[in-house]
Length: 188
Length: 377
Image (tube, rainbow over all chains, first blue to last red; front, side):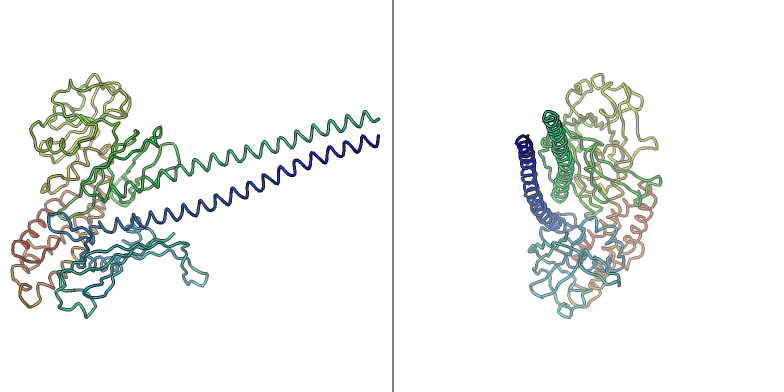
């Protein structure tokens, strides 16, 4: 009788052992799966951010607000009109709600700037909307995890002798065409 | 006694197996359910992301027609919606697109997109045209599919019909001279009749036999006025055409200076008058911001022409900008800004005055160019 009891106990232990190992395997599988999912998710986020940077750059290059127009003709490709850039800066300064209510829908969290390399080194920020958080004491901190920057070489046209520019380098200088680059930084 | 214990062990084993089995089964069912939800959400998200990218790319590819393979979405119905508030102003516009019956949707607060209300098919067609008033305001995007058929009737020999025929190569479109050439709906998702001379689309008139009783919203029509200055939307209700634009025709706001007026072409692809007006209100909002930018640029332009030196201080240049009373850029832009404010606040029907002012601006800019002055745009 004792022998039978022991046999039943052994069988029970065996069953519990099998189930235990089964669950351990499931646990390992789950850990592996979720880790894999996490990595895929991060890769996907990076991919999306890169896509977003490309889209934003594309939208900026074709933005009627800053593109070099030529009357009724087609606009000049990859060319930015500095007269319009300065006007846009001024309009956004005077109406900050355009930034939050309108252009945010177009660019989301991003910084967009135009830098002139030749003949004068100068930079213009045309859109600035960084993802920020606020501490209890009211101070702000950067709340983004990733940042993707893209650069695009552009021609810069300024037919107005830098009028409206607070930079001595521009005064009375006939800079019709210069070159520089467009910087688009997107955040996630 | 031993027998009883054996029986107890056996029963315990069965109960244990049953409980453990159920738990394992529930565990896997839980995982499957979770995965199903995750997959659906992932698909929804992917669709919206891909669509966003397609639309962004299409919008900036000025004057290009793109054929996008969407066979991966076959079986899904895409919807495009743009609703105006009661007043018709810009502030309360709600626009979105997505997949019908799922959570996959994305808002379109500022993109102008003329499309049918719903769409299915293996190939999506996007066509982008710049809206110029007279400077470029933005690119308007027309979206359709190869499973939507367009019949163009009337206007034979007209420039518009000819331009439309040249521009829409690859579309499911047929240019017909008689209503009898229309065939049955068949596998098509939607049929639109574009009437260029008012011979077919008449309120209460009979729908061609082949299209009658095709189902609600399947057959629609757009009647283009003879001067290309207005449109009327129709839908087939049973075997009769029903005019949708009860409040009157929808005026097309365009300068008439360009070969392809985006606002007119957009009207051919918009689902109805509300969708058309709603999207145009988004264009007018952008227009108002651009006018402010140009007003600001005008100040710099005036300062530039006030400078001493060769070529900079021509009297005629200054005249076109601000000196001449009544007809100068400063006053025109100011009037335009005022008209656009009214338009954005009160709705599409209050935007009509924008058109003559845009034409005036075009003339002044041309004058600047003719006198070798720096142009505004």
